Length: 213
Image 1 (tube, one colour):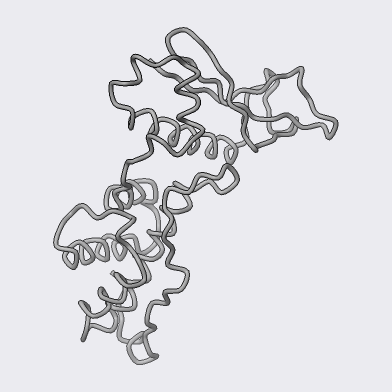
Image 2 (spheres, rainbow, N blue to C red):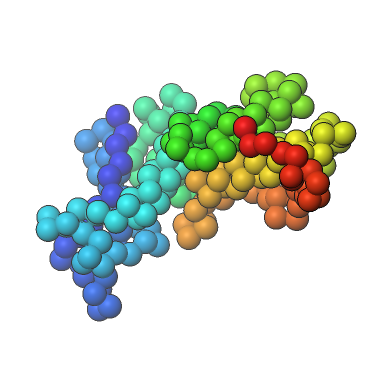
């Protein structure tokens, strides 16, 4: 079984007093170390040189998730491959064919943000978006500026929902991009962007009549 672990080599401190974060990859009792573009200082480490900086750990988790997705893309072939061949696949674009389910991501995000004010608005927006798409599985690759414009039309006549729901979908989509993409390591799983899409705004009268759900 393939395993991954963020690792710091204590004896490899750089001249600038930092250490490079590596990912230890073990497969069939053999080990390789994959260098990353992440670096830590002494304050990011415990006394036993384990990483304690949560931001670095989160980035490591995202990178490891990417590596696992590439291995999963090999299916049973991975059992017949030597460790160096697998490492080459992980460093390349091969094997990464898994689509990201926007709905599944959003629901997991809800679970992690139960105390968020207005969470029900996000849940209502997601349900509405699924109704618009006509299904409960929507891939991030399907969410484009054109899709959002069509969703606006779907909400025609419901200005408050048109403004509120589209803004929540944009927020969830951006959260997914933040979670799955790692530009520092050239990992871009969600290539499309909504940076050029602006949700319609409610006017003052509509805001005054809106009651948060």
